Length: 269
Image (cartoon, rainbow, N blue to C red):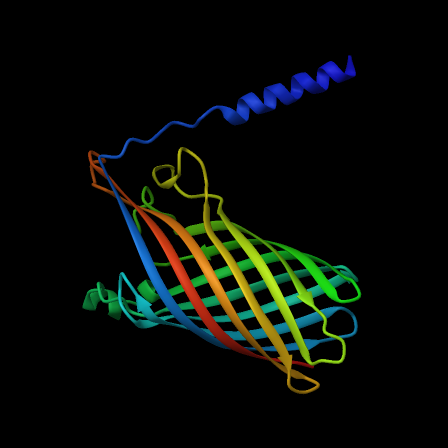
């Protein structure tokens, strides 16, 4: 009886999950592929206390040396402050804020360039990271809930003023005995949680980015280190244009292939 109930419940859940949401019909569809190469640089300053608390401040600068859509330009700047806490040895909690400054695009009008709401964005996030260290390696899994906020005027049928994402990251660091270097590798999936109906993919939220990064952390002194890395990013976005009377809906599917090389300075004390 118990087994039959469980099987029946699973069948109901599967059926409900499989029911497609209302499909959206687009009057025109276009696919765009963007190829880009990027240089990244940045610095992080972290203060740790014995009670498990930590405070971090970081700055990141991104420069496109090649972009098939907008050409070479200053891409963006991220200034982040975050607070961390380790309630137990294997778990860390983080809460943070990021100010995002975007470089002007070649397609922007002078009015857009003069309006700070167009190139200033805000982000808050909360993450939980679990980790475990073996003899020669450390593995970790991080789940981050992220809210991106904008203050410019938007058509809410096309996009949100507040975008919610779930970022899932798994990685490992390798310990080289007697050497001041730590090779590492991680992969991250970013999933949308609240895109509007017309932007959804087959009536559902979707994975909008897959990132993988490989690098080496080199400790140059007791408190400071350098991080050399290569990152590959696959991005997918759905750009919607809807006329005021909603009698014509345009969809542009954008696929991004981004190659990035970078160096970061880290100071911990």
